[in-house]
Each structure stands twice: as C-alpha cells, then as structure tokens.
Amino acid sequence: MTTALQYTLSGLAIGGIYALVALGFHVMWSAAKAVNFAHGDTLMIGAVLAVMGVDAGLPLPLACLLAILAGALFGVALERFAVRPFIGANASIGWMLTTIAVGIMAESLATMQFGGFSRPLPSPGVAGAVSILGAGVYPQELVIPAVAVLAMVGLHLMQRRTLVGRAMQAVAHNRQAAALMGIDVDRIVMLSFGLAALFGAGAGVLVAPVIQASANMGVLLGLKGFAVAIIGGITSGPGVVVAGLAFGVMEKFVEGYVSTSAREIVGFSAMILILLAFPQGLFGRREIFKV
Image 1: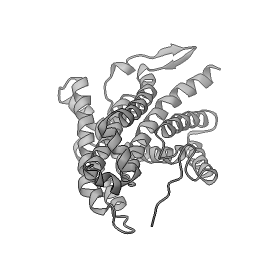
Image 2: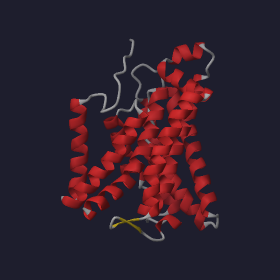
Image 3: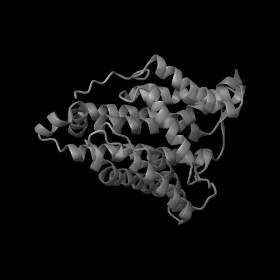
Image 4: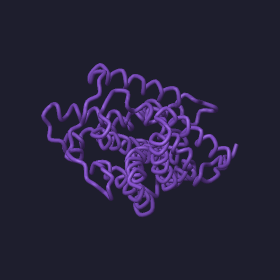
C-alpha cells in the first residue's frame, strides 16, 4: 500500500509537468492550429535561467519570476518570426521545421552558457521530505500537480470571463470571422504562444529543484508533453491535464514494478493504442475544416 502511494505521489509530480507542457500545446493549437515544437525548450529556458539567476546572486523568487518572463518572451518572439510567416500557406510545414531549428539553437546556446552538466535549483521545497501515510515526498512534488490544476482552472476562467479570453475563443473558432469583428488575430495568436511559453517556463522552474536543470532537459519532457496533449485531446484543456497526471502515474508504476527501460515503451505504446481507438484523443472533439 505504501509503495503504491509512493509511486502515485511521485507520478503526480512528473505528471503535473507533462500537464503544464501539454496545456501550452492546447493553447497554441486552439489559437493558431500550429504548435511550437521547441516548446520543451521553454521549460529548459525557465529552469536554466532560474539557476543562473540564483548563481548571480538574485533572490530565488526574483530569479524564478524573471526566468518565467524570459520564457514567455521567447514564445512571443518565436511566434512572430518562426511561425507567423508560415501560417496559412498552402500545405506549408515551415512553422514545424523552423520551430525545431530554433529549439536546437536554443539548446546549443544554453550548453555554451550553462555548461553540459546538470545543476540543481535550490528550493525550500526540497529541503526535507514529508511523510504521507508512510510515503515520503518532497513538498515541491506536491506543489507541481496543484499548480497544473490551478493553471487549467485559471485558463478556463480567463477564456470565459475576460475580453482577451473570449477573443482567443473567437480566433480558435473562426479566424476570418474574428478578424471581421475587429479582433487583431495576429496579436491574439502571439499572446497565445506567449501564454503557452509561460506555462512551459513555469514548469521548468517547478521541476528544476527535483530533477536538476540542464541544457537538454526539455527534449524528452517536451516530447512527452506533446504526446500527452494528443492523448488527452489537444482541443480540451481539462483533458490534457487529466491525461498528463495519469501518464505520470502510469510511468512511475511501470518504472517501479517493471523497469526504467520499459517506461518509455509502455508509455508510447499506450499513446498509439489510445489514438487507434480515439483519433481525437480521449477528451478531444472532432474538428471540421472547410477546403
């Protein structure tokens, strides 16, 4: 019982990271029908810059805040220069290739400035473990899934109760109609990419004290976040968060009862099987495009 609880709590922590990354993919896809394949690198940027800020003498909260804002600015700039020129082009995959290229360059630059070794982000959340029914867990690990759920609720409230959120919904529903109603579609799409990058950089800051920051930490986490977004249904914010938490728990059970090597095999096999049964994802809705 204690072992199962231990795996569940640890799984919810890493699942919360997947959920935050997947929530970013949801925001981008809803607004632009395109995504940033360097999104995992926004997580890396948040983690690495937070560590570098603390090393430079900044207080931890300020270093984390500046790192998250820098990640958001990265998302905004990437949309403007690597995505927007290719949106709407017939059969164009330019945005896919350019975002991948930018991600590789970001990782190379981080390696040059940060080094090739992992470094921890000091946090009071990992100063000591707490016991929950016999299972040991860091407070930082409990915070991560809670933040993922709060981010999902906050996004839902923003979409329903603010003008910006309603504009995002209008653009997601029909870009041309939204433009005719006076909505600046380009600005809304750019805001969506910035918000998605904010989630990604925030995830990096949250997970850095647990797994340590490195220049290449965002590659696998970003890929799994995208897989989670597809499994949950990229059109559903709550769906991707639920899928992210469940995916993390499943990974920990496989890792604990089978092996670490089997974790990726089982995880991505489950993704393939789910998509065969539910092409739109578990909670996604079918989207119809007029041609």
